[in-house]
Length: 217
Image (tube, rainbow, N blue to C red; front, top):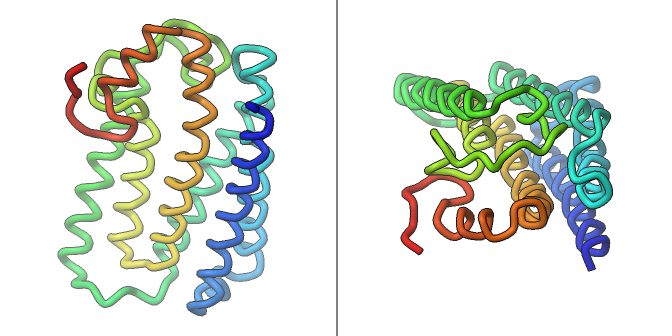
């Protein structure tokens, strides 16, 4: 059942990449990336699909990520961020006020970056943060308000950049980021439940997946 679910999730990831490309092409935005950027977008979607399948196998067989999976994950983050920032700087702007967009975008970049950095600080090592070692279940700091503060912070910072640039294609890339992570969370949460059992189930029941106030049991 688990392997079948991983296959379905991987198909969803490929579909998300194809939908993103179709949306960009449909609205005449894909061409603005240029041939090289369009190829990078396709490679990013393909890499995400491979990574989702590999992460599921790693967690089942090793109880942690392999160095290859972790490296591809970080590379995918940086590639996607680069494409989003490039899209925000080279776009036909949305009909939004420049000053409000930049003000809101700047605030989101600042808040998202702060949230990401606060999440990083809660880990005892880069290896634990990257899934290369198990360690303990992290529930302190921003993890009291989100089960995934690093992902939320990174995504909000990218959303801020997209809004500051008033870029529709950058906003589509940010939407793809959150959709793919919704898929990834389904894999990771199964692993955390196997690894930490009742402790993680209690944490999951009281703490939002994205961001919010702690819920009573």
